Image 1: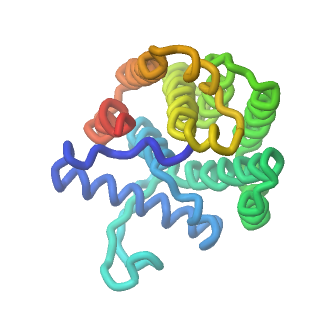
Image 2 (image 1 turned 45 degrees about the vertical axis):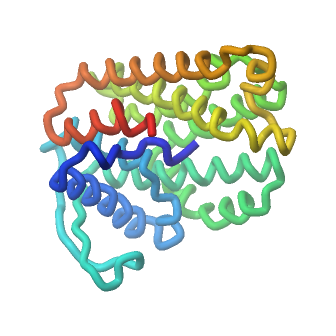
Amino acid sequence: MFGYVIPNQAALDDEAKARYRTAYCGLCRRIGALHGLRGRLTLSYDLTFLDLLLSSLYEGESECVTGSGHCPIHPIRKINWRHSGPTDYCADMSVALHYYNAADKWNDDHSLLGLGFEKLLDSPAQTAAQRWPRQCSAIRTCLDRLAQLEAEGSEDLDAVSGCFGELMAELFDYKQDHWSPELRSIGFHLGKYLYLLDAYDDLQKDRKHHTYNPFQQVSVHDLTFHKIVKDFLQHAASEAAAAFERLPILQNADLLRNLLYAGIWQ
């Protein structure tokens, strides 16, 4: 369920692309500083979006640090980076999300890769849980409830996608302040979008391996399957975008709109 909130590069000019890369590299740098090289394996576009959103909304409330340097991926050419207070939060959430997701893969499918990733991220995830107990507890609770629905073979698209939506709502609710309603709405509807898109993306693979997918039955018996999926996705995306437009964001508004209105549809 990670990696779908990507920028539409064709619609960005060079300056905007540079700003996005700077944020992406800043998050990677902070994950590494807080959780080491193993933590950097959890870097994702999705948490880069959250970092851009929170850093822009809470602009000026924490120091914004910029710089340039080398990294393991770019050992020769220097890269630019920027981070602020919310970046460290997103770094912690990145390792926590991937840790609990890996634990679920082991519990559900006995995936050795999932088990290995869970063990690798155990210490960073515990550190993140100490700093952000509400969010990490929500991740665990929502994924447990989602696993139960999946084990029951639920075809209730609102219920299963809503579990991941509730998880994302807690993550987006950074400070539980007056911006919480809009942030939670963005997270909830974007979470539903990501879950349903991932299920749609994995349908053929899940059919082949006889594993759970909420679209299994409707795709077989309903000739308008693709329209049903598109309608669900459009509704979730439009609700997330509407909540975003209620926030007084100026910094990086162009990047955030690119991601919400165009990038996620790629």
